[in-house]
Image (cartoon, rainbow, N blue to C red; front, side, top):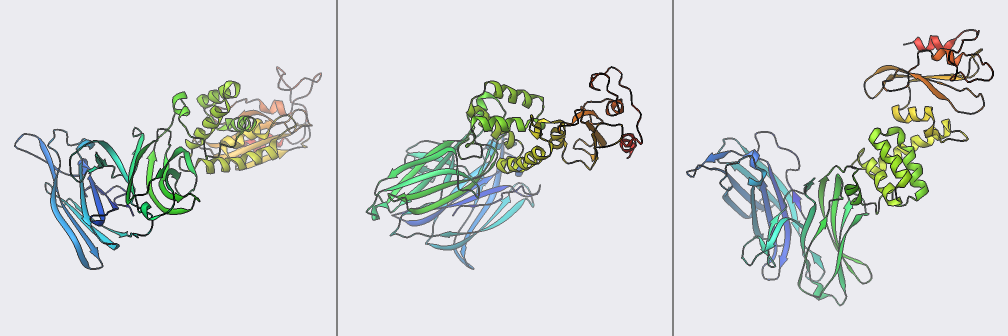
Length: 477
């Protein structure tokens, strides 16, 4: 089991420490735990050395217990490199310790004390367990690797001809586009069957593979086999994920399973290069056809800014199906990185509502003025719907106590000039950026000369009518 400390940010006076415990097995020594430590350089005090450079030092205490019994422990000083740049993240302190431990349940009590700054310390307690059955296929924990290179040197950081620097933080910000992992498979020589390892990246709490982030190969019969590979995650957007490793036989039966949680932070811009790397496999856009993708792209136009609108119209004209799928996915990722599908599903409910209420024989509801306003600004606080006011065309006045930009007492005035269809046009609004026509009453109460539309009249006259509700309602706060 992998245990990660310090997932959050410590208070200013605490050392910022990240620790992982990874359990492995070696035939010559049995099961053991590797404890990797990462201490950020910005959370400790550096002291000037005789060389004129700065060095940080932290006292580390690791105590492994079963109940109240101490099984093993270590206490030592961990030093940074000597440096001129104490604020560089690259000068953080990294260490690895290895302890042989029998199968069982343990608690690691770890404490860290800054040797150059009084009262700068932190303590962590984390339970973990070790299990190993020599008669079954087993998997070690999954270890993430920061960097590696070929090496014949014998130390705790070398495995199978490689020097491996651990990735202690299970966090991949924008700019880190490789996810390198190491694990071991045990006891395949005990089976009279072929086995394969399958490694995938899945959305946290979901069982679907993200894009093409999948690796698999057959595992030969051996006491120990190594799984050492990496994924290109440049197309992996912000969210929570599991790196999942499975052992399966020829019948596809699950023999062993390990998972490692990690986080990704990456904002993806709608450039051709970034869109080309975006995974649509196993996402809510994968099933979209050319027809449905065009419909869905049109449906989100009420939410778009100028650049997004231009991009959508360009895709509708010249884009391939994959282009449209990728852009639609990106659009919702930028609005809900952790669950773009949920954001789209919620918006879909609004689309159905405006289609049902504002659609016409020619246009979908989201293509009408009322539908666009509802989708863009949300539900109005109040609506005056006037269908049969003497001397007036059908009209509606929508009032918003407040809209998203903070503007208050916002009005939208719509009218229906053909008296037959459900087509209401927006003729006036007080919202910033919307059409404004302070003579809107003349349009609603206009006389019709020769069948001319009141919108086309140069000076429509207000015809006689009884009790103009529109003006009174409009002025109402």
